[in-house]
Image 1 (cartoon, rainbow, N blue to C red):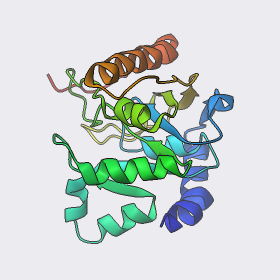
Image 2 (cartoon, rainbow, N blue to C red):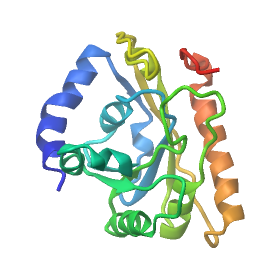
Image 3 (cartoon, one colour):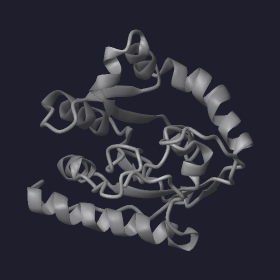
Image 4 (cartoon, one colour):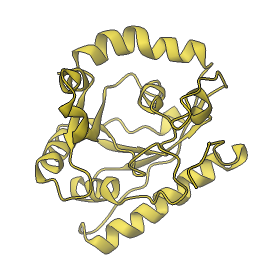
Length: 209
């Protein structure tokens, strides 16, 4: 599990991303020592690689189950510390796997927007907040800045802007994991990420309208 993450990822791909996009990390001191849910905005397919530069620890990712239908890709994703989740439905297996990881003190990466495709109506889903509430662990807002210019998810154009990964102060959940509590925590998360990236303006997407 996560063999490629430790060797190819940490040893080659992540440093290559840091070099090519001159990645700057801000707020790494906010990353908890134990279990936490990382919840960044999602504007590029390269976002997991940029997020991985924020910490020497392994970040386990929930990825859409459709990717496991592509021959061998599922095994590659698992080697990069990812596991499948069925989007748009309650996936008890994926939730159980995520809570098990958090129970062991691991870091979990969830992109609440669900997709990096530039639809203007991408709403922030409450899955990350729900997991933080159920695990009783911090929810960490992260702003990824200019990643959509590194690789445009719609046009597939590659650019080389200076990318920033800005880690905010963790949000500490409390109380039972109700729908209302998850929605409230998700609203706080979205506002926190928006505040972190406000100085840099909105992403420069080729939007789907």
